[in-house]
Image 1 (cartoon, rainbow, N blue to C red):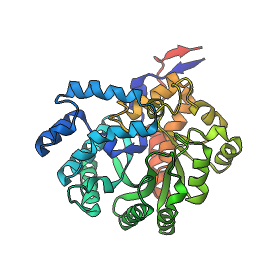
Image 2 (cartoon, rainbow, N blue to C red):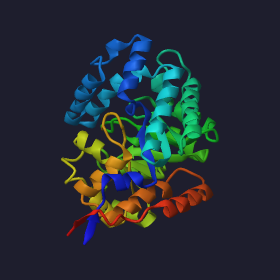
Image 3 (cartoon, rainbow, N blue to C red):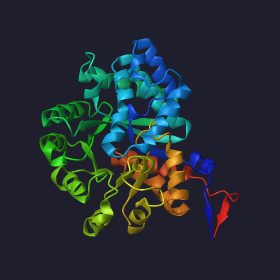
Image 4 (spheres, rainbow, N blue to C red):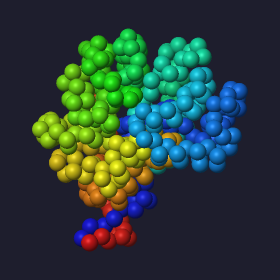
Length: 354
C-alpha cells in the first residue's frame, strides 16, 4: 500500500526550481500596474485581473510550441525598464519562497528587454538587483541562466554568451538556448556554446520538447549541454535514453507546459513516468508560472496524482532539484544535506492508495 501525498505535504517540502522563465512568470496585478505606469494598456487584452485570468486560460488551447510562445507578447513589452525588471524578479523569488522553494534558477533572454534603450548589462543588473533584494527578505537562494534564442542569428547568441560569462561570478550560473525548435537546431549556435563552455559556464539547452531525440542529441554532443530542458521525446530513442541513464544526465521537465503546447496529449500520456522508471534523473519545474497558472508544488502534485509517479519517486525528484543545481559542488552538497534533514516524514493522515 502506498499513500497519496497531499498538496499541503508537498508544499511543506524544501524544493528547488531549475527551469523558470522570468518573462513567463509575472503576476497579473503587476502586469496591470506596469501597463498603467508605462502607458502601455494597449499591450494587454484586458484591463482587469479577472479579465486577464480568463483570457490567459486560452493558453491551454495552444496548438504548438510556437503558438504558445506568442503569449509572451503580453509580458515582454512591459519589461523594458530597470524598475519593471527588478520588481518582476523580486516578486518571482518571493512567490517561490512562499511555497518553500529554497533555490531558484531564473532564466531569460536579456536581449528582449532592450527595445526601449536599455543595454544588456542594464537589463541583467536590474534582474540581479531584484533577486538580491528577495534573498535578503526571504529564505531563498537564486541565480540566473542567460538564454540565447533559437530564431535569432548566432551572433546574438554569442553576444548573450559573452554577457553570461562576464557575470559568471556575479549571479549568473549558466547559459541556455530557448525558443521554437522547428527549423532552429542547436547546432546553428555552436560558437555561442563553445564560448560559454570554454569559459567553464554551466550549460542547459531546450531540446526534445516539440522536436525529436535528434534535437536532444545535438544539444548534448554538438553543444555540450549538462542538462536538457524538457527532453520528453527521449523515450523515442531507447539507445539515447540509456546513455542518459548511464551518464546520469538530468532532464528539466515541465509537465503542465508540455500539455499546453500539445507536446503530449495529456497528463496521463506524459512520458515522465517511464523516463523516471528507466533511471533518467528528472527534475520537475514550472516553465512559466503565469501562463501555466502553476507552482513547483502544483507541478509535483500533478506528476504524482495524474502522471502516476509514486511518492518515493517524487521525493527523489524533489531532491534532484538540489542534486543537479548549477552550484559549486561543496555548496550543493551542503544544501542537499540540509534539505535531506529538513525533509519531513510522510504524514500518517495521507490518503491510502492500494
